[in-house]
Amino acid sequence: MAARAGAATLKPTLRGIDFPLLLDVAVLLVAGLVMVYSASFGLDMARLGKPTTYFLVRQVEWAAIGCVALVAMALIPYEVWRRWSKWILGGALAVLILLLLLPESDQPAQRWLLGNSVQPGEFVKLAVIIYIADWLASKGPKIRQVTYGMVPFAVILGVVTGLIVLQPNFSTAFLIVSTAVTMFFVAGADLSQMAIGGLVGGASLALLVRISPYRWQRVLTFLKDPLQDPLGRGYQTARAIYALQAGGIGGVGLGGSVQKMGYLYAPHTDAIFAIIGEELGLIGGVAVLVLYGVLAYRGLHIARRCDSAFGALLAVGVTSLIILQAALHIAVVTATVPFTGITLPLISFGGSSLVASMAALGLLLSVSRGRPRGLSA
Image 1 (cartoon, rainbow, N blue to C red):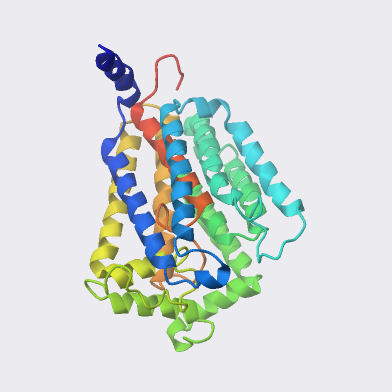
Image 2 (cartoon, rainbow, N blue to C red; image 1 turned 120 degrees about the vertical axis):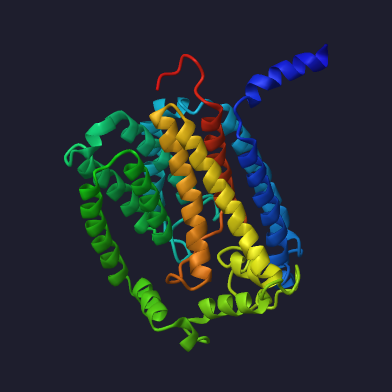
């Protein structure tokens, strides 16, 4: 009787959960833990006074918190967040402003809180998705009107990304804009608006890059071929390419990377796909791409079958964010775009990135469960 009662209680909770997506996330998470350990094993931890398992243990701790966040977000009806979207965005903006007001640290960018333990920008991404989904759903077909759609949309994005660029954190700002624009397009934006917005946005992007000496230098290095200066400005990119080349088809074997032995900067974070390519080869790299492909398919499937505009836009936003971030990380490692530091979602070391990604995917799973009765669209 007790077992039946427990099953009866659990059934409504699990009803509608997208289990293929959940399984895919679990595989990515486990693969990430394995690769974080492998990629960080070659770091000189003795010099830092840390055990060789330091980064693995930290990542496991963050993964546990991330799992709690995923379950909590999956169980909370997604429509609840619509009621609080303005407050959520307001809180995110307040934190970004606080970051700029804090005394300057010894870090190259002002992106951290609580002793360099929490990176608020990772959670701002989710806050923007929730607010933009609510905003677009409330406007409906009116977003095709320039003064009702494109102009206020540009202002909202300009305020958020402006605060992030000032940190500076250009890659996060780029991801937020790309995700929001994808949501705007899916919501039914006029193509002429998108074209004009693309021109203005592209010009703004070029200006931000040009006025920043280190960003401009990265672009010049990329355009001149990083491999022409492998010991100078193209060092990181060259080392990533060497790692991928060394991996070949089948890889050198798990744990056998040479580039992680002090040659490649941040092999467990910004360059972890290079380590995957070196140790697991083309086969391992393609396997990772397939896992992200499954995530993209399931996320868009959830969006397509959702009967709520807000829920569908949430699903599109979360899916776009994860896939765009993964694509940017892989593009950087493969020298397809100029170098920028960005984690590979669910795989790279990083507590803020992992917990924020898990929370976002929990929200996606909540959308897959549907809208409970009594909650308006």
